[in-house]
Image 1 (cartoon, chains in turn brown, green):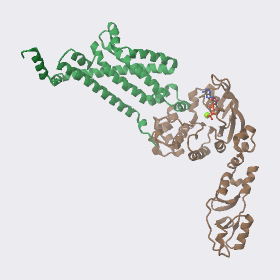
Image 2 (cartoon, protein in one colour; image 1 turned 120 degrees about the vertical axis):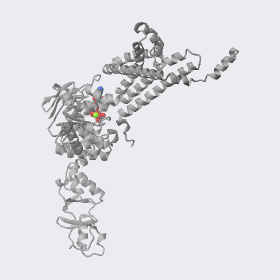
Image 3 (cartoon, chains in turn yellow, brown; image 1 turned 60 degrees about the vertical axis):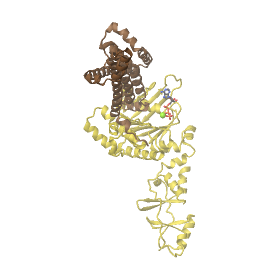
Length: 363
Length: 233
Ligand SMILES: Nc1ncnc2c1ncn2[C@@H]1O[C@H](COP(=O)(O)OP(=O)(O)OP(=O)(O)O)[C@@H](O)[C@H]1O
Ligand SMILES: [Mg+2]
């Protein structure tokens, strides 16, 4: 969908190119994240795709067309653009902001209004905001408007430069989830710039790691990059905790679950204590096959001969098979146990244990 | 009334400081002069604004021209108004044109400075977003830059208007003075009639300036609703 061939940008008055002979190919419907240290040329690369910066040499095609053969403003109307500072127009209402590109394209009012309403819904922005001005919105809401505005004319390509850089971590995580959700429906070709490697891993189908001068150090799926960093630079950039980072990419369903210390109501106190001893933990679950009611501690057994009348405590954290191993690890650690229960709806699947999770880290 | 001294004393006692009767008799003339004052001001600021916009666009488009433009308009601004009229009258006569050339040239520096500062004050990221979405330079100027510069531009128009209202009183010297006419004529009487005319001209001129300033402020609020409705959280 987008192809950069030997693209070079040398800014006037500088000797070293900001981007030096970069070649990169981005597939249709793919999310590619450009990541790298500050000043490595991420923004320059992105802006060359919509010609906010003109390349010094090399060629760029979008959907097979050489972008230099097009009128710059025509090209840009077909490419969504989101920047960190959002750049909403303060003198226009939210509805007018969202309608920017449709109005440049000369859409009629009915079509524009319909599209604005549709987009507000898409980015989960309550319609009451549409008549307000950007100054009246929170940072997170403004960022949603920024995304809606970029999507207004349904461009096949979306360029995003640190789109979530200016909001707090909780809002950022929400916006990232929303973007992934949106993308699963819209299937745009997205090029996103960030210097947050965790964001790159979370959002990218492929991640391009750049070093100074726009040198492509590695271009691959997040999993592959974490498993096999191409060189020292990439390994350094990923950080020493890249094993743990990798866990966020692997769903629980990928690992072997332990049946866990599960006992039926008929089991005796002695049986229960021996199971706990075998698992080396202070608790066990009550249940039958996939039907698990809850759990109890050794102390709860006081005065009981069998489990028939023992009170079952409910699980505080129930993991789902699609949750990541990172979440499983968090659950295990925060619940002070060696394992966390995994349920598919009400069906008990087993326990995610530290042993099994850490097997994935060292791999 | 036997001696000059007593006559003078009587005259003083008889005549109040302000001759309200004169004002009463000349209401129509005062009103006509006020209207003329308004017309002279509106034309001067209107023409000044058009010329300034043109020069500002040139200055913004070709940055190098900004310094010479402010230099020339700066000189126009500092020439004493009397000298300017003395210089113009032999060429353009005791006409409205002479008055307007003077009045317009005094608005230019203020207006150009504010227009350029207003446009320059539009944040870069807003322009980047506009360009990135496919605005052409021309459309961006009209649709984004100019509206966002409006508060600063109107601030300039307010100063220019108030200044012009004051200056119009001087154009009375070439017979185009609006309320200045009364001030000028009042200076020729050493009596309460004179004082009354000077005061009437001055007070009305000041009142006009105040009303114009408040009116323009109201216009600004009306044209920039987005600047008011801002959350302060
Ligand atoms: N307009 C410009 N003129 C001259 N040099 C520039 C210009 N824009 C960027 N540069 C230089 O080009 C290099 C790459 O800049 P770029 O903005 O692409 O970096 P980046 O990877 O986006 O960094 P960051 O993470 O800080 O945003 C930097 O050294 C920068 O100083
Ligand atoms: Mg950048």
